[in-house]
Image (cartoon, rainbow, N blue to C red):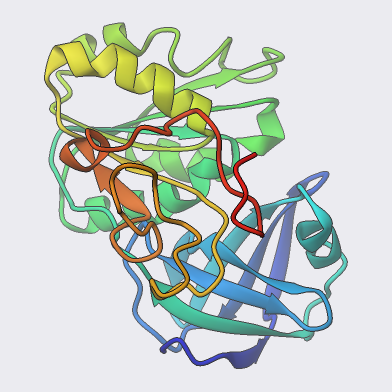
Length: 259
C-alpha cells in the first residue's frame, strides 16, 4: 500500500472488554512490527494506529476507546468500510534475549513484534501491565511464546503495581540484553531512568499527534531532535532519544500548540 487512502471492509471484530477491541482487515501490504497505518472513519477523522498482528490474509489493529474517534470506532460493525493508508515509519529491529515491556494498549505493537521474534527463533521475555486484567490483550498468546510477567493496577492479573516495579530484578534474573517498550510516555520515563545506568540498548515505540504521516507537516517533530516521528520513528532507539528533550513533558495538539 502507500500514502493513498483505500477502503476495506472490517472482516472481523473481537471485543476484549469494555472499550477495547481488535479489528481485522484484508492484508494488502507488508508491515513490520512498530510501523503504523492511518485509519479513516468516514465523516469522523483519520488517526494513526499500530498494526498488532498479521494473520494469514488479515491484518489486526487493536484499539482502546479514548477520545471521539475511538468512541465512534467502537460503534463500527463487521462489513463496514473504513479507509487505510500506510504502512508508515520505522519499526523495531529484531534482537535476541530481549525484554518486551508493554503498558495498556501499548501491548498492541509488541504482539506483532513477538510474532516476528518467534518466527526467527529469537528468545524474549514479556513484561505486560495495564489497569485491569482484560486490558492485557492476548495474554495467552504471549504466554505460549515466552516467559511472562504481568502487573495490573487493581491486582486482577499478576502482581498489583506497575511494570517498572520489578524491572531491574527481571532484567538480571532473565539475563536480558535488549529492551523494547511500548505504552504511556510516563512508563518510558521511568523505564529509561532504570535502564540507562545498566547500559542496555533499547527501543521505544512512541506516540504523538500526527497528521500527514509522511514527514511533510512537522506536526510530530520531537523538540530539540528534529526527528519526525512518522518517518524516523515511531520506534526510536537509545541514541535517538539522547536528543529528545520533551520526553514525558509537553506535547503539541492539533494546531501545533504546546499543551
